[in-house]
Length: 480
Ligand code: GLY
Ligand code: MN
Image (cartoon, rainbow, N blue to C red; front, side, top):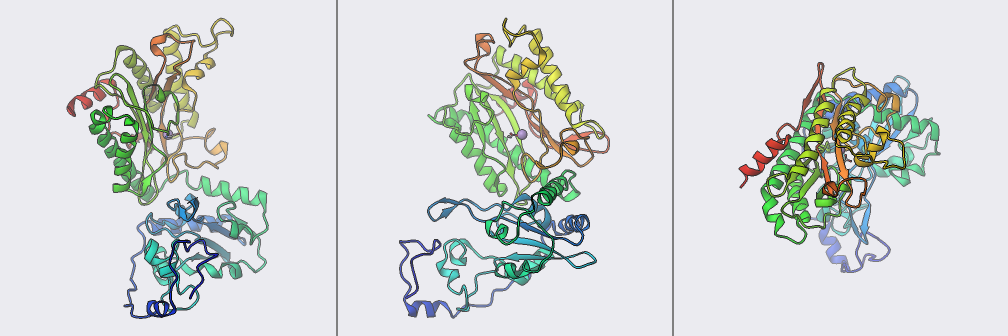
């Protein structure tokens, strides 16, 4: 009998395997090797690897994909590799292999790059020979087939080796930078180098700022699916009003589109009806969707290539905005329009935020709102109480992309052709905010679209969705 205990990957409820059955499992399998074409983004990933190689000559660079994370007991969350690993390999959703590690080994004239990975479960009875039928985390009969090493090399255009070889490969004494914090067993093999490793993280993040043509195509695909998800939801709004937890119906409707078209969600869906819209990241989604309320939906489909959309619409559940809802909506719309008009190469990243905020401040001022009451001197920054967060962010493999880029190249930097970003002003009047008239309390509005900076301006990738209040109402009416 084989051991049942001590292995997380074998459940306590799994039955023992008699020796005869183990012998039976070892034989009688057809050869089902594949000749895989290169991954669609492989040539672009090769250029990015060349940039890494050029930036860090004579150093070893180690980029782990990360591994499985336990959800509970022996069930794991769906695996998603680290975005830097995806960017440098062009790995695709359902094929991604946990615990892979990309290693750039200096050769004197550049680097040789090897992808250490878990190959297809062997069937030959050697080491790991029972994995395919016994291992619920990695076994082919449990979670599906992985590529063999030669299939991996063909798909990525990178030399492939078994993950078990990694320790030996990292053994020689070479200056090494690891993308640390993604794989504890890799981190343990290399002494930390905090400064150089922070520099690596920054470089990899900034390498993602300007998207190449393949990435732009992926983002277009992700945003198209996101737009389709919003149309799905609009078609289900009436149904959601009849349910105790209508927000969950909205979430589920969007999630169905995300799984159908892509790998899944780029971030947890925010389905916020009524005053929940005043909670910026309302992801509990356990409330009702009532006639007369607004529904704020902030959601994104992550494509199979892991690029994601990020769009927000605020819809009147009844189909028509009330006067006060429309007043708030129109101001956010005007702010977004001003932000969009500020998008062009050479503009500062802060320009679109400042343009949008100026419109919001002037609008709120004209309404006579005084957030500081009589206690504080009137000051336009106090309107931040109602708008709270920044007006947009870079978008790509991560919803909040390029998060480790230096300020001078991102928030204090300049827009360039190939940047992709969101413009998403909002107004959020908390239900208990005594500084605003009662009619405004509990109203939250955000409008968010995704933009590609071009040589002479910008294009909206999410233009397949109605944006103005009139367009939104016409859209709702067309669904009745
Ligand atoms: N869509 C969520 C966010 O941008 O924070
Ligand atoms: Mn966003």
